[in-house]
Image (tube, rainbow, N blue to C red; front, top):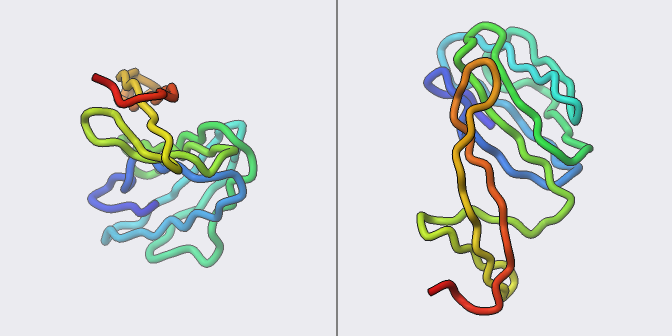
Length: 130
């Protein structure tokens, strides 16, 4: 999950539990990335380039990320216990191992920055939505 244009890219990263995530800084300014979320607390103090050690997300849930220097920067790491996930286009349909999944999206405001975050829910359908 990089920092580019003083933003996390992507703003939402979905990984499976146990995944190591690198946080390369592609900006010309230094960042101080942190999370105080219950599933993963960490700090990558003022740095440029890529920190030597990635962050291992070993618990499932949502980690909210911030930058101690740029308060407007907010990102999310969604850590799942399943390898079955995907990103849908506007219709909200993802194919996973020959199963059709329909995802409902809604927008919520979270955190002190009041940034919109996409909240995903899913239900498995026996046939394509009409």
